[in-house]
Image (cartoon, rainbow, N blue to C red; front, side):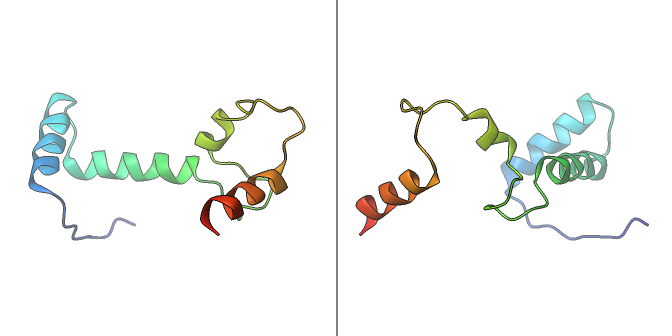
Length: 83
């Protein structure tokens, strides 16, 4: 069931979304609803350390130079960088 929601958004972004909605013959509410629906579909429902992988993360798979790199290498990198 639809519910009313008040959002505070930058004026420039509001103008852009209104123009986008007009060009695509949609309401601003429908544009926001479509965006949030897509966001929900693309966001894994599992915790970050589980088997679920976000689309952006999945797109980076295979970028590492070393074939034997794993999560522990990443944690080591973070420790060296920030500690």
